[in-house]
Amino acid sequence: MNAFVSLAQSLHMPVTAQELNTTQSHISKLIASLEAELGVKLFDRVGRGIVLNEHGKLFYEYAAGALRLMNDGQTALKGVKNSVLGTVKIGAYAFTPILHPCIRTFAQKNPQVNFYFSEVQQQNTNVLMNLTDLVLVAEKEGSYTMQSHFPVCRELLEEEFYVAISPKLFHYPKSKTSVTLTEVSQFPMIEVAPSPYYQNWVFREKDMEHFRDILGVTFRIGYTTNDFFTKVSMLDQGLGFALFPEVCVASALRIAPDLQILPIEDYPIRRRILIARKPREQMSSSARTFWDFLLDYYDLEPDR
Image 1 (cartoon, one colour):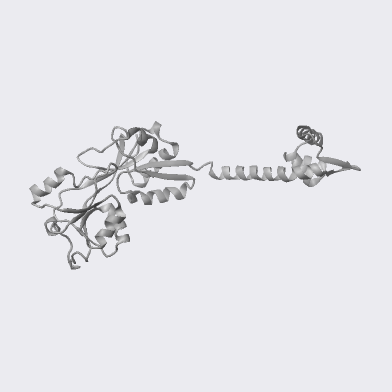
Image 2 (image 1 turned 180 degrees about the horizontal axis):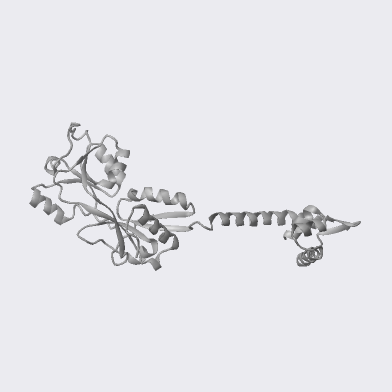
């Protein structure tokens, strides 16, 4: 094909042979083989020279285009041969923005990698294992759900919770730097509804009992939702107050910048956010590469 396109352009056998670093007799054999395969002549002799005939002119348009596409493919492949290709699949069982700066930096270095976030019911193990390489989870009391399937984990942060309240519900002065749970217990709470996707550690039954027995505080959960935007919108309208983990605060303020975010005095509960992975041999190559990058990005202990 290269011999045909080059000869069609130069119409000069010695030039084509020199361009392809071969002999004129070899070019003649290549053209004869191509003509035999196609069943038509591509060149006509005129005196001591050659010209493209009608068959040759028609075939040249396709042959030249095919070579251009092939060369483009080779160029594209050279551009990414040292890059990572594929999809990193992450199960999102905690608030995902904590990973976004890391993902952005990784994507700049590996533009051919895609990210897929899934919310699969944790009890559906077969689907979960097929759809995710890594999971972002909340941990409490030394364990996390799915530990048997995602056995290797690293702690990303340990976070506390904050009271989020709108001035439309109650306006605290700017000098106010913290609140007690007793202060806000007079208002209805806006909370995440029970979900098969998320473990709501804060308001499991025994935690509510802990608040009541240790702090003497009882909450009335007036509104529940599975949607973060809806929760923040209800907060912004002054329908109630909410407790937000630290990782959610920045995103909530981008939606409702007037919210007051206050630390909680003597708050008894913290939670750890973990990133966990499947056994390495079950992960895609792109997921393994991202995992190693993530450990370095967050200055975490590398795999042994």
